[in-house]
Amino acid sequence: MMRAAIARAGLAMILLSGVAAATHPARAEDSAAAQGKLTKVASFEHQVTGITVARDGRMFVNFPRWSEDAPVSVAELKDGKPVPYPDEAWNSWRNAKKDEVDPKNHFVCVQSVVADGQDRLWVVDAAAPAMAHVVKDGPKLVGIDLKTNQVVKTIPFDPSIVLQASYINDVRISPDGKTAYLTDSGAEGALIVVDVDSGSARRVLAGHPATMPDKSVTVTYDGKPLRRPDGRGVEFSADGIALSGDGKTLYWQAIKGKTLYSLPTEALTGWATASVVPEMLTDKTLGGKIVTVGENGVADGLLISRKDGRMYVTSPQDNAVKVRDLSSQGTGLTTLVQDAQLRWPDTFSEGPDGTIYVTTSHIQDSADYKPGAPISLPTELWAIRPGQAEATGSTRPGPAR
Image 1: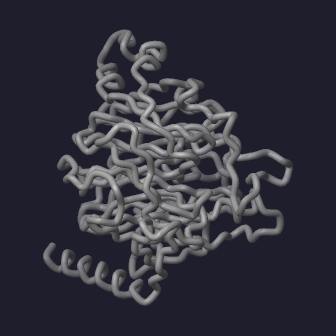
Image 2: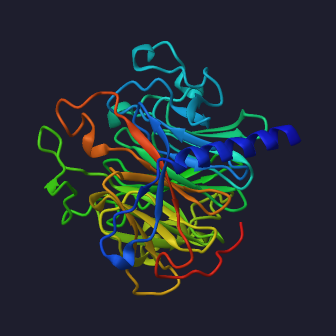
């Protein structure tokens, strides 16, 4: 165990020292915003979305099957290179072998990876290559024990939870490890609440204005509306999700949206062992408990820092990462780092030392939106090292978890 710990520490030093030479100074909107130190951790040959850093510093990423039939779905970063995780077998599903490989125990189209406080890696398999039809028996939440590197939990989602037009997107796990919260960014936006022990799941706020795209918002990039070749714009529903450090408040928003919403998690739990759906969990009752937190503008990834309790927000239209102070009502966003290299900042994770990691998925550069673009889209993983005075807002320690 000691030898493994020393090896992981050595890997962390290699990664950090290796990216120091690649440091690119952040370009600020103004002098007050010239704050975050941006460094490249890794480059990938394929389109990355998710990043998570475990408590021991191990890093994991994922590659969805969007424009290409990605050769690896979930990977651990070793010496800056992605290695199939937990093994090659789980990563062996291919579009061309759809009728030959069982989607129940293979990754089909992975959208997100998140490590929890119980040393488990949770994998969100949307099972919808190209964001099109959901592969039967494919949608699932997979738990992997990071100590043994073995799959210990597979929670399948039936068609009443993940619809044919669904695209389950991101997940947050409660501090006690007993509840998972997911967003569905498909045609009908929704939240999905999962009782981890039993594997039971409920779909809530389906089609509610708080989980659906905002028709008044047009997602732009490089100064122009971002559209597919046939003219369709970005239509992603509930996408970014965050959970307060104490596990008591859940936050989310749509990409094609501008408003950040929240709910007390006590309104979402307590139903798994009930013989009937509690009144508190009906959409009508839940809708009355939704809080409009404020406007983030178009945003993808959300993260609440363990270190200081602030919310980090990706701002794809601005090539930026911004910060929201959740301790003060009515406060807006502060730009932490803005850089042309942040081509669609996508998903966050926080390292054990408080370093913020973010992927750039280059959605606007993909073949889905740019005719003639390469099918295999190069993307990156970045580290942002904020300091005490680098953004306005709360710097109070966040709740331990």
